[in-house]
Length: 339
Image 1: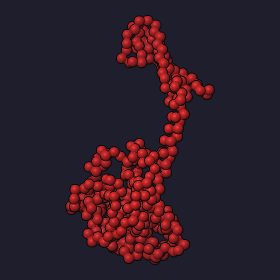
Image 2: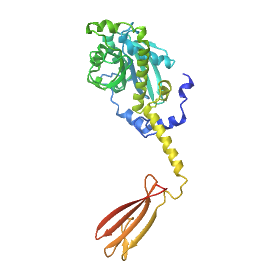
Image 3: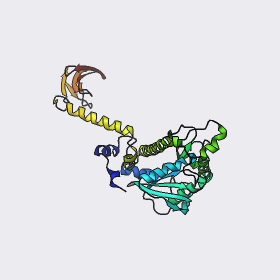
Image 4: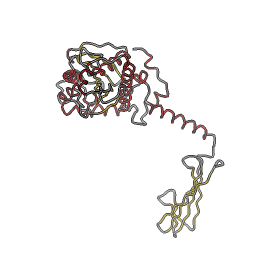
């Protein structure tokens, strides 16, 4: 795999590796926690070796032998991913299909699957693969066509009904209640004008006029997958180099840059960040447990504390009065810097 996949700006790497938002990579401790709490599919019969990776399964639902049809657009998505990563498909009889694998990062492995079955039997291949690789069902992604979305439109949904899709039905049938944990990446192919034309429509190849829309849908599907994995705490720098950076990340980078610029602008004023204390007492007193107040042995005490405000453009005076067990606080804000 080319080293160009690793060429990501230093600032992006720093942001994506920080623990400051839900789309960022978590610490090693957090990763360990995720691994320990993962639930194994109930039908799993064995584990080949001790698991050293978190594993994801990306399935391109299809009619084997009809890879270019509208109904098999899911397999066109995984074919594109294999091509972009310079990988090759391997015939895997154990999984009843073709597989390709790669390491997303040092802790995560991704297995891609093309079932060697008809659409309504794709579930058999998915079940064999989940068992063989010991994959949690909440880490299974199904790429499939969607009649209810316009050509090129993409969405991701967790669980839910099959919406009439025979491939999804097949997977749900073999996984049972565990199927509610899988994620469906639905790629729009549009719908024919007549309901009677649906079967013929999905089994035919895309037209030349639809080619650009199909490629856009495939790209968006891989982009959505990348950002969804990142949203789950995965380091996806390998894939963002191919399919782009989540706009939320770019916004955060911009915000950090602006904050640092603002900090540099204000750092020249040595008066900011200083606090001054002035205490006035009405009579003899003893030190209170509240370090910001002195309690008078008689009854009354005033305290003024001059502190900077959060935006460092104003000076805030806090006036506290302690009298007979009661504390009254008043706040006065003074403008600074010619405001």
